[in-house]
Image (cartoon, rainbow, N blue to C red; front, side, top):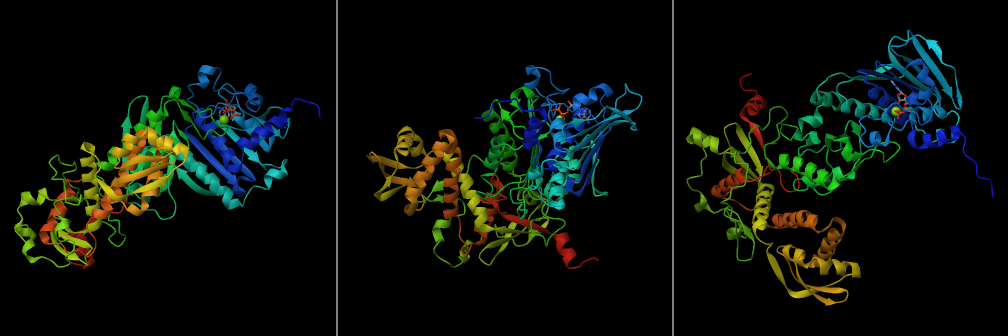
Length: 599
Ligand SMILES: Nc1ncnc2c1ncn2[C@@H]1O[C@H](COP(=O)(O)OP(=O)(O)O)[C@@H](O)[C@H]1O
Ligand SMILES: [Mg+2]
């Protein structure tokens, strides 16, 4: 066996570089972090050939004194922390003191800087293991770090680099992250001599628009909430927003771009009521947390954190977003359909909270009834003339002023194609997807009912035997009452069998086995308390979908108006449970515009 020897310094740095400097963009990130940490308020980036030929970052920060320059390039030398106490409450982006040393070990690096204590600038060069003397240079202010020919001395790594454009794309992403996280700083980036981006607005909202464009922000909801120790602000998309191609997901914790499963789970959960399962969600969120409550020293690239109280953070983020989503105020400012582009719906239901006196009942077969009583003539396809009553207001002018205010969704005019309800309000025409709208109403009513009661059950004629393994059986034993609350009745029929006797109403009896196992697996994965929250809503959502009014069911005008009134009373009624919009408005002025009236 070979002798055990300490590794030479250069090799240690090259090993560290393997983790820290994966590609040009990762070294750009490190250089940007240094400039940001220095307190600079202007940072310019010049990139050549995707960063493979050169990355140069200049800033107007305070610079580094001449005698400190060699230290800046040594491994484990930093000005940012000096004790464990510091490490446990980090406010700077860097702290490991290894970035410049690692980068220098795999490239040709020049660090130039002008500190106020020096009369002119000084520079130091590093190439592999050789570090030059400190020499004078021309520099008025700040620091410039130029990194050339990345991996020139480690050809194996160089092979992993992609095309210029791909590598530049990664650099651009790092630029966006930095520019979003630090609106107080002006940034610019050029590639092969051409200016590609500039970010110089100072307010966070305008900075986001400047960097990411307005597509997403126009279809987003602003979230802002918190205390001194924990604060969240930023945009989350409106539930109905669908970018089609790619999601925008930015999470910053204390000014650092982070990927974090706790928070992304909290965001997904907040949206679970208003979007498709599995649909990903766009957001740009900034979390400010007392640095003592979060550990950033988790990964050499510093893209992960560990919260001391992750459950509390989860709850906080979930509630901050969920509250906004359920406030029914975020009616899309624009129509979600591109052909009615400019001035869309701006009204919002005035009764945004579920009223306590909701007449919620079940029919004989346990189906939920709303004021749109679908059970009575659900099977008769014909429109019942006698239903048309005094609420059949086809002339908007007949409705007095006060009433117009009371009914933001207006009054039904007609039904189109057995799918849509056409309604008229003060602004013009509204089109409602009746199934989607009804589904949401039933869902919300069920949730309210079940907050007070239990899920309605359907007894199975013949109990269904489900085979489980021993760990699953243990879950059944430990969570019998939870399963009961969720609508399941069962008895243990063998060491690895349960006989299911009842399941939540409306669920497909042929799927009992899959349903039971998925509930058990969820309980195992998430712990019992969360299942009740999450899975209950899944079951309710299925229930609502099965019981909502189907396409091609002719509705009377009264039924249509009742549906509209229910929508106005219902939380989140502007999306169905799957995140599709339930209605949108075409204003009279849009119609005038399309017909070129008054032009
Ligand atoms: N642009 C800069 N302006 C001022 N000081 C800098 C700059 N870049 C690097 N430094 C100094 O060099 C030191 C080493 O940088 P680095 O290797 O990235 O480690 P770290 O950022 O973890 O401290 C920093 O602690 C800082 O004092
Ligand atoms: Mg650093």
